[in-house]
Image 1: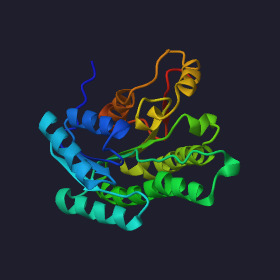
Image 2: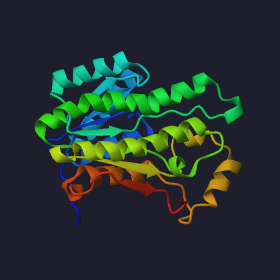
Image 3: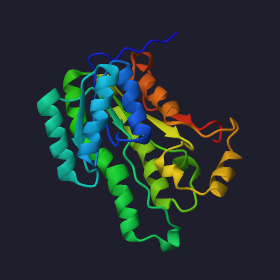
Image 4: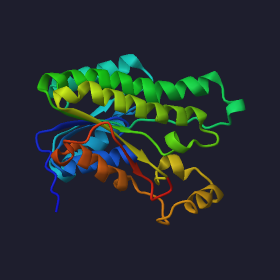
Length: 249
């Protein structure tokens, strides 16, 4: 039986005030890691951090971080450095959708999704990786999506960012491997979150027909794999993409 111990590790999870991000933070905390919860709403981030600290007995910090704003990302990370000295684990989970058919998609719809899902990931990673390089150890896990491989109607912008994260992952993995820093990606399929809750029952039914396991995924299905990739059990895995989609792709 695998027993993951991340005691002494400091983990920053972007977009972790709800859904997949919060589940990942809870699983990392359960494994003993100290966690930094981030989100647009600092009050909510602090609430989640306090809950995790009380439940799992680890240090937890809630920080406001707007992934559209370079200054917000930098200021938030400086606070993390000042209080904790940096991070060992970085989970790039934050993402938004602005779904619309391509012919109706505005430049703003396109740029906003790229700014959060891709540029924001670049910015926070560029800050966090400096400490990892100095320590000659680190784990980076990027949350991609099945639609980055299959495409999806109405999600040209979102799918493009999730495909781009794969190239980002594979290239960065090669650059950082010599310093014992692994970089991997997880590509979830249909996971039950606030983002998918707004879909109609008709759309959900259509998705379900294409999932061999016959159910939608849960945030915990993703969180378990992220914890594994952060552990020493995955120390020889880098530049990889793990698909978590019940067999739909």
